[in-house]
Length: 469
Image (spheres, rainbow, N blue to C red):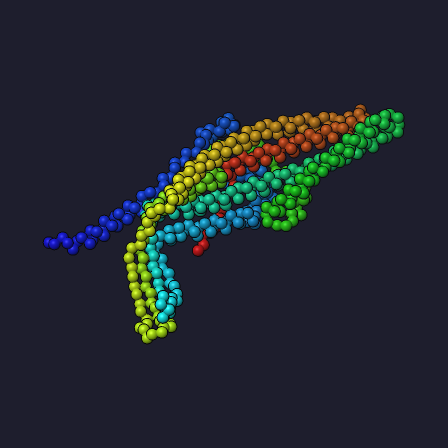
């Protein structure tokens, strides 16, 4: 049998195999990311287990239904989260079309052309088809760029949610704590006003020198001045909550004093090292590595020839002519297209080398993001444990002061001590309660910092952007 008829088929197979090989070569390798996450947390309490923990709804440990409702509202209404969600939508649309530049395309066009000898003018209409082959790794590299951009947008959305939930919780804790501080400071002021009155009575009876009155009045003035700080915090926290919830003014209910959120007996029972990799900053750095690897692959592909297939169909009609000519000609052509970079002063090589260094920088930035996350988590764990001890100590001190206050009240009822001693005891009692309020707030905020460091905001199903065409 004659083997010559098989040669075109064999040549086609070899050509296809060669193109497939070229399409897969020159892909920039993805560097292996090995985050230096510790096997055990240095500042975790003794006996803490290392398995993963579910961080969804972590703020509910503060035991405040009003805070839970605020977080739900904020996730739906916050403008930063809405912006990030729109960018995710945009990145998803582009990601689905990442390979489109390497698919066959068809263009229609019209033009009018004048003959060089100015004897005729032609109207030209036609179609051009082009298919650039994604050789030298361009197919995979373009997908990496688009996927890296999508992953970065997802990380930005996650980061916006993490920041939002942490800020809402932080501002609410500060608001409620400042309201309790204002009440206690107002109690101190009232007690000192009564003390000034009593000292003035004693001065009138020549039982106290004028110096005692001056001291009492100075102490009262300092108490009045101290009220400014919690009031400023209340105002700023309420306004910031309004911004976080996408509204102009705070809700009137926020300005009514309420119970302070508190962790109570809550303790850290798991140290989820694996959850640290879900930190938005780390996810964003990982997405940047993927994008940089894709751009490196594309820059390497640009060094080599661009190969494609093209076809053209044109129809021309004579519009104006000084001579009688035939009109209505149609021409069809097709064939390979080849763009070979011969000399460009090394621009393509320089671009590839630059992208290689950018990929290395992205890997280093990823490692830095992991180290920063570990450091923040370690500091937050250490702060949380230390502040738990501080809260317990202040509670015990406040209980001791309350016992002293009860004894002073009893002695005053039996006329065994003066009412001045009662007012001094009342001031001391309120100040001890202020220490407790401050300790509880500090521990609450350390709790917020810990779960923010671990990337602990939720991704509710109803808050996730949906895929749209």
